[in-house]
Length: 107
Image (cartoon, rainbow, N blue to C red; front, top):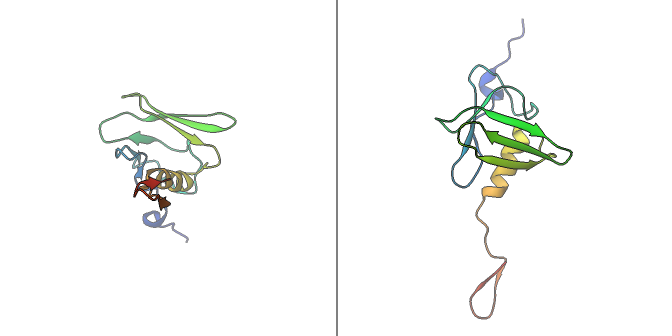
């Protein structure tokens, strides 16, 4: 008999913004990183409500029903694993590519 190990496959909390907004899976949803965005029940932060997720031709729109926070994500990031990757890239500190002759950062 095959039993799937959920410890390795379930979605962990996803840090959505540099302000530490997070997306948390409902413990009973059994959502994995390879599941499409919109699968299962996802919660915004610890005290907010579940997210309403809608799709357009080009983007996903994630809206917290409690506080009204909105996150717009390009639709090529269509799974929770890809969403985690996109959020990490968006939230990473941006270092200057070079410094000009005055010592100022040039982006």
